[in-house]
Length: 121
Image (cartoon, rainbow, N blue to C red):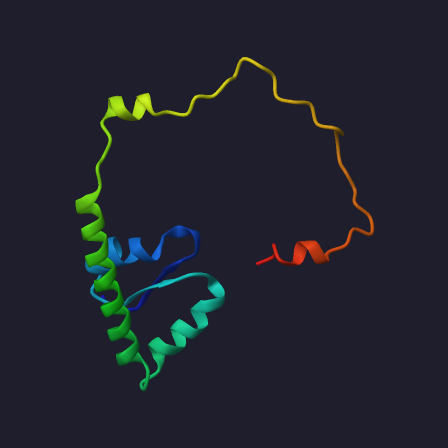
């Protein structure tokens, strides 16, 4: 297969693409963070002037990611089942959750949007 494979969004990460997908696919494999960036990636892949360098740069980047990941995995200490059970979250389900101050739908009319702007992606 030589058709470029674009992977992204919530389906996987750049590291997963570099470590698991790219080595197992013969064509170019590119992780695209979200759909709005896919156009630029696709443009680079179909461009006669840009494709070769773009594919080479992505492959080099993914090789670095694989090396770093291999070093991290080698240094990780994986907990035993007993250690994981001893370290589990201690949740208290004996008391009821607090009652909300208001039940049902809350409508905020003329609410200033400025404080929300920094939270919008």
